[in-house]
Amino acid sequence: MQSIRSVLFTAAAITITLVAFVFTASLALALAGIAAIIAVGSAIAAKLNGRPVQARARARANPGSTQREMRVWNDGRGTIIDL
Image (cartoon, rainbow, N blue to C red; front, side):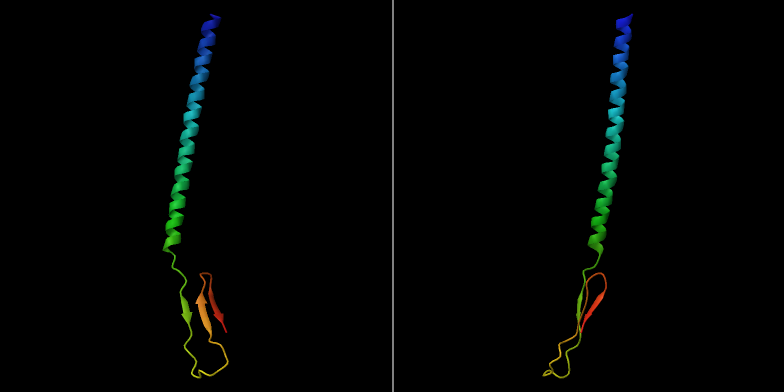
């Protein structure tokens, strides 16, 4: 009787271990899928953002002037005006 009980407990422990392994693996797979979807969405969103476009001010009327040309551009975080 003792050996039958031992065999049953061993079989139950193996079964519980396998169920826990399958449950953990399925959770890990679901988490990896969610992370992949977030990464793909982030990559698509980054690709859809426009590149900053450099804008130039009009040329000065007096070409012999010692003053520099004003530069204006957008670096993606705001407009920069270099006087």
